[in-house]
Amino acid sequence: MHSCQFGRAAFLAVLLAAATPWAAADEPTGATFSNPVIPGFAPDPSICRSGDDFYLVNSTFEYFPGVPVHHSRDLVNWTLIGHALHDPSQADLSMVKSSDGIHAPTIRCHEGRFYVITTNNIEGRLVNFVVTAEDPAGPWSEPHVIEGAPGIDPSLFFDDDGRTWYVGNHVPPDPEFEGQAEIWLQELDLERMALTGERHFLWRGCCGGVWAEGPHIYKRDGWYYLLISEGGTSYDHALSIAISREITGPYQNNPRNPVLTHRQLGYDHPITGVGHADLVELQDGRWYAVALGWRLVDGVHGILGRETFLVPVVWETERRPWKEEQWSMPVFSPLTGRVELQYPLPFGGTAQSEPAGFADEFSSPELGLEWNFRRSPARPFHSLTAKPGSLRLQLQPGAIGDRERYSFAGVRQRDFRFESTTRMEFSPRSDDEEAGLIVIQNDRSAIMATLRGGPGERRLQLQQTLRGELNTIAVQAVEGGGLYLRVEGNYLTYRFSWSRDGQNWQSLGGDVDGTALSPATLGGFNYTGVYLGLYASSNGEATDNHADFDFFRYRPTAADRDDWYHRQRQRQVH
Image (cartoon, rainbow, N blue to C red; front, side, top):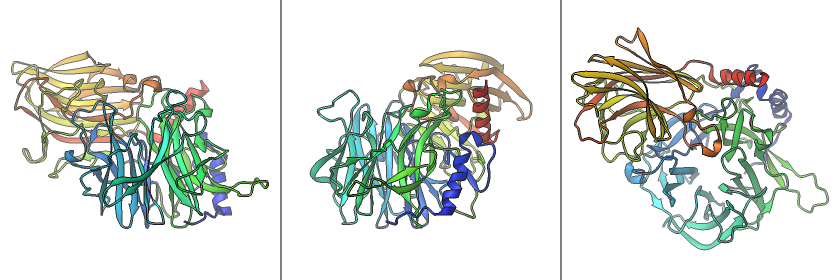
């Protein structure tokens, strides 16, 4: 490992960023990038480097394919290249409840092979497993389940002596208070993918130690560093670090913990819940971290879910002359100690791309990587060949509100202000059958514009599920034939409309309050973000009917990061 040289030029660049903290996001100066680097439902980031290439993964919970793998060469522009969980056989996501499923993956590269280790939470039954690949774009292996590994958020550490270590968390047998967790370590036999040897209990965190989780171990200048999250993933989320000469401990608390948190900034700070980070060293010895955080709307609504932020890190040696050993510790976001909306670009000669949106004309034989299903399908319910140039969704009995599979294909909402459009051909045969365009947070919270009715009477209806109860907002009688459907998002409101020709639009129900998609208190939040997608259901009845969608288009309608900043600033002024 290299020792980071924090030179004058780097210091001045960070000083420039620090001199104008988040409130100056509308006045960029110099070559900067804007946070988050992966917006919209990108929580629990983990990162690794292989040569000049960086790879990053996130949690996906009940969504499939799971664990998106992003690639970058500049740390600010990320391209989705695949999923570590791309086959239903790799993880049982068939009946998981909302916000269960795949938690907090870690990605590492060792001797040319990539490893992703993660937890599948199935109603409290925690299955920790590893998948591997020669190419991070895939395909990835079948899962190697790690037997006898309790807890969540596992990580791997490949030591320079050739040994591999599993580090995870668990609830200790003697908790001192409710919510206390403990980090543990055990050697992993990489050939057998099995734990071996003695189990070591490392740390319960600092600052109260509630929910010590998300552990990662790093080695630098002969010292082992244990980075964890604690405080829960809401307002009190924080990052802490401990240090040891031996990987098995004892680990000593960094007296300057927590090393990164926003809990001291108050409930009204526009970025909150900062934590669950992973460090990466660049080839030139500089360091960065990726961490999750929420961009709140009106101080309480994390409508986009937790996102991935990039933060510069430098190493500082203690100024404690009375100590025999002077520890070197990472300093996150030097000079401000908080996640900023803008920093100098990590690499010269690069620029951050503007959000381009997403469009799919369904001209390929397979769905694009951006598409997800809710839960892993038992069998294919979609086709791109049955009607070339269209996505066909087969109606299934499962429906929104059911904790089971249903016919849904969606993409993440990545912007506070957006427009999404599709064209649908669908002929419902009974009142049980419906298909259309939906906005969904989980099984209990969605807004749906769907076509229903039998041959003699068809209607387009707008409905919203609130805590599992279905409420009808608007009903519009329509004739048969194709329909264009559109949804426009504006922070906490959604507006649906429909058209026959794609040019002349009629509103369906006006503005719909979307705050239920993001509860007002993060104590009741969901781990995921909002999805926009295509939906078809027979609501419990057997059918062979289908709906065809000619295209799907999504585009941001504002310079999102700056627009959000202005909204927050205006709110604080008043």
